[in-house]
Image (cartoon, rainbow, N blue to C red; front, top):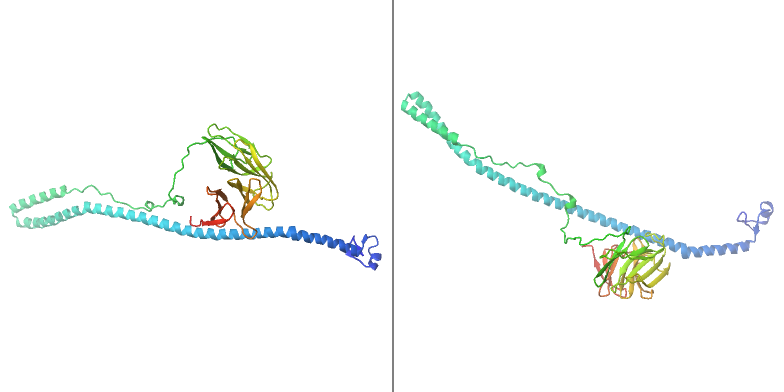
Amino acid sequence: MYCKSCQRLVCITCIVTMHQKHEMGDMKLIDSVEKTKLKKYEEKIDKIIFPKISRKFDRCDDSMEFHAKKFDTAKSELHEWNIYLKNTIITYLDDQAETFCEKIDKNMDEIKQNILPQLSKLDDIKTNIAVVRSEIDRVTNSKDFTKMIYIENSVESFLKAVNAQNMKKRTHFFKFTQSEITYSKLGDLKLKEVFHLQCTQSIETGLSCIDEMATYNNDELAELRLLPKKQHLASPVISSCTEVFFDTAPHIPTALHTTRDNKVIISTVEAGRDWLPIDELCKVEILVITAKCEVIFRFLFNKDLFYFPNKITSIGTDICIVDSISDYSGRLVTLNNKGKVKWTYGYNETNSGIIADVVATPLNNIVLLDPFHGVLRVLDSKGTCIKTLGLRGL
């Protein structure tokens, strides 16, 4: 028998002696029930728990690989930047030193041009004075009065010449100090500006914040589509600053796009949905409205397709939505004008990649920005990747 109170198999002797008042059950029946329970657990583990853990494990593993690549890239870029800064500063300082050396040489030439001629004249006077000095001794001893008068006149003449030999204006001496050679702050070492931006117009709204913007044109009327964190879409008209609101409550708007024929496409998620990390499907609504906030299409997905839509573009009547599965994995889901999935492009559990942005070209191609691999991917209208452009060198 099976003792339900003690949860163990018992023999006849034990039933009489130790389990008299315990609830008993048939061993075969209990065995069948337990096997059924274990089968359900086994099925739950195989179909739900293990796949979920595997997904999380794979994502953690991919995340580790992603960050390891970022770590290696960061160290490599730091090394390259360090070499660049050193070479830049050395070149900058060498140029400054060469400039200052040229100034010093020029200053020395000016000093030579000023002092050397004076040295030459003074040297001649010095020689002549020495001769006169020796003549004075000789004439004084000879008691020749005529020669004395001659020497006296000569001495007075030399004294006048010495007094007339005034020093020219003092030449400026270039004095070097360590503060003469400096280098600019590292923040000043930057690339030259390619173009200048100038504010031509600004408007003020009553919105608490703005997450995303898009433009809408109708004849000469221009509007900004603003996506604030509040549950509505605002459309201020630039000329008058009047505001028109399209309410999406209780859903939260996450992405915005205006089509070539001036329709507005909005994606929303259920209230309380966090941005990242994402592990489960989300309740999503895709709306297509007119510029006057009239609903044309409304497609509802009840946790059966999207995780977190955060970018939208369009090709004709097809809607291309970037769906972020996690902080390092995403995909592109394309819907037709009936809200049915036409095709998808993206990454599976073993192939991670981010779609950070998306745009449709006039030739009905789609360009995806994949910063995980550092590339732009170009898709055709059927979702086939036709070209990959590397961004590492840009």
